[in-house]
Image (cartoon, rainbow, N blue to C red):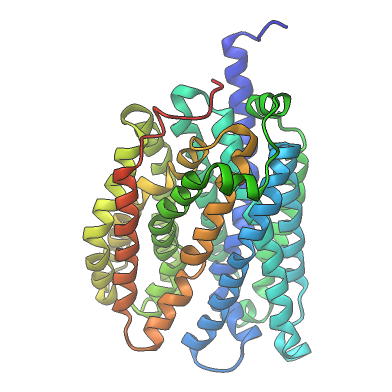
Length: 431
C-alpha cells in the first residue's frame, strides 16, 4: 500500500490532533467547573460553619475525585492499550458526561439532608474515573499522532486544552456573575455550567468516534508484545513507572496550587472580591495557555530535560516569595503579575510532561504507563493541594503550604537533573 503524500499526512495529523484536543478541553471543563463554582455551591451542600470550613469540605470532595483517578487510569489505561486510544477516549468522555449531569440535577442539603453531599461525592468519583483514563489516553494519542520533529509542540496541546477547559469554566463564571445576582447563583445558577458540560460531552463523544487510530497502536497490536496490565507495567518497567511519579509530584502540586487553589487564595487570603479574583485568574490563565506551545516547541529544539529543570530551579527559588507577596497584594494588576510569574515558571512542567511520560514507554503498555503512575502522584499531591493549603490556613500556619510546595518541587528537580533526555531516547518509534 502506498503512503499518502507528506502534505496529506500532515493534514491528517493536524485534523486528528485538533479533534483529540477538543475532546480533552471539554473533559477538563467539566472537571474544573467544580472548582470554579465551589465558592457558590459550598453553602448549598455544606451549610454549617464559616467560609473556610465550607471550602474545606468542598475541597475534600474535590480530593475524593482524585482518589478515583488511579482506578480510572488503571482500568482505562489497559482498555486504551488493548482496544485503542480512540476507544479509551470515547469511554472516558461518556463517564464525564454522566457525572456532570448528576451534579446539575442533584437535590440540595435543604431538600434531602446528608444524602446531598453523598451524591456529590459519588458524582465526583465517577468524574475521577473518567479523568484518570482521559490523561493517559489523550497524552498517548497526541504524542503518537505528532511527528518526531514537532512532538513537544503538538503534545503541548494537551495542556492547552486542559487550561482552555479551566479558562472556559472561569469565563462561564464571569458571564453568570454579570447576568445573575449573588443570591441566584448560590440558589440555582451554579447548576448551569454542569448542564452545559454534560451537553458538550455528548458532542465530544461523536467527535471522538470519528478520530483515526494511531500507527503506534496498530503496530503494537500486530506485534507479539505482552498484553497491557498493571503486573506487566511494574514488573517490566518499574524504573519508568517510579520516574513518572517522581517527576509529576512537584509539577502537579504547583499547577493546582497556582490554578484551582489560587482563585480561592485571592479571595480568602488576599481579600479580593470573588468577581475580581475570577477576572485576575481568567486573564492569567489565558496567557498561560498561550505559553504551552512555545515551551513545547522549545523542547523540540533544546530537549525536554533543560525545560523541566528550569521549572524546578525557578520554582525552588521563587515559590515562597511569590505566595508571600500575594498575601498582602492590593492591586488586581499586581496580583495578576505575581500569578503570571508563577505560571510562567510552571510552564516548564505543564508544556511537556505528557510527551516525556509517553516517550518513556513502549507502545503496547504506553497508555497505562503514562496514566497509572501519573494518577497516583496526582492524587497524592495535585488532588490534595487545596485541602492541604486550607488546612494550613485553618491551623493558622498558612505559610507552611508555601514551603511544602517548595520541597516537592525540589524533589522533582533532583529527578529532572538525573534522568535521561527523552527527546533523544524516545520509545515512540513511528514518525
